[in-house]
Length: 204
Image (cartoon, rainbow, N blue to C red; front, side, top):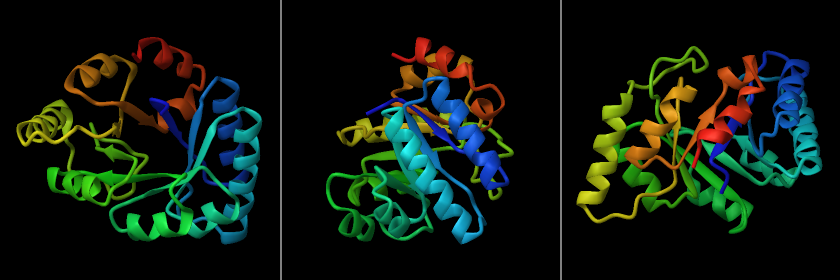
């Protein structure tokens, strides 16, 4: 599984597509198409385009929230927030070969995601980010450390956890030392797609 995921950004279909193309041109290998409150037909168009582009670039394309849409365009999977329907239902719809990610903010969320089970967990936020409208309580490095420690104390295999929410290049080493598997980035890659190469260099 790739360790760097780009969560798409943009207020229009055109903005979204441009940002996705830039990320792919700069070497991203995993895109999560996320466009909240989008007009349905435009979202479908964007997802179809993104899936085609990702196939061309041999990159993973997953869709945020929309399980049926992910199935209809044969995306590589979905990412579900805590209020976006069940992982179990998504698995029944998509089958065993698709990636299903789930959001978590607390240790109880992480236990829930492990039990469901999903393929990876987007855990955050690390710090404040303007990308998310309804931001969950901020974890900070200490929050991540506490969650990983609790899993280890219970002898639970630590799942593939992706840090999300204001992650910067300088955070990578500390996050990996804590036991975080990968990172999901939105704003930083949107503003500066060339930073993808810098992230790849520092991620083990």
